[in-house]
Structure formats: C-alpha cells, structure tokens
Image 1 (tube, helix red, strand yellow):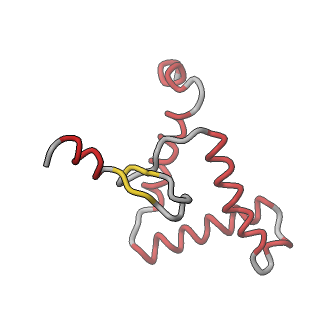
Image 2 (tube, helix red, strand yellow):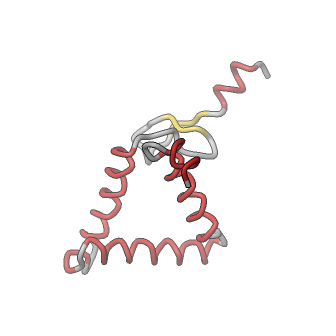
Length: 104
C-alpha cells in the first residue's frame, strides 16, 4: 500500500459528527469553542430527559458523569485513566499551554 493510500485510510467519516472526517483512533483537533458547544449539546440532552428539567446544570453534569462511570464499569473501560488522559489533553490544548508546562 502506498503512503498516500495509507494516509487516506487513517481517516473515516462519522455519522455522529455530521459526516465530519475524524482520524481513526481519535478526534480531529478541535477548538475550545467547539468542545464547549459539544458539551452543552450533551448536557442539553440530559436536561430534556425525564426529570432532567428539574435538575440544575451541575446536577445534569453529575448524572452524565455517573452514566459514564456505569458505562466504563459495564464495558471494562478505565474511567480514571480516560479522565487523566482528558485532563492532559485539556492542558495541552489550553491557551498558554506551552508556557504553563514550563512555569509549573
């Protein structure tokens, strides 16, 4: 397989992201605003769920995190490991990340 074909195979379209191209094994790089919008969309779904309209945004966040913990238990995915990786990714993507790493 040539390099160009191999590179093309590293990408796939996802219906969950409206047909956006994402790199296999991970999300395409996205900005903070897009991540916030995606989080708000997920939390909005919890707000629309039965009883969700009675909870605060932080209550819906707690429900989402609890569901993710349950999902990790059921599918044998490591929540703490994923959380640590997400924190590292967040730090790396945050404004001033290069300076923050050296100043800590």
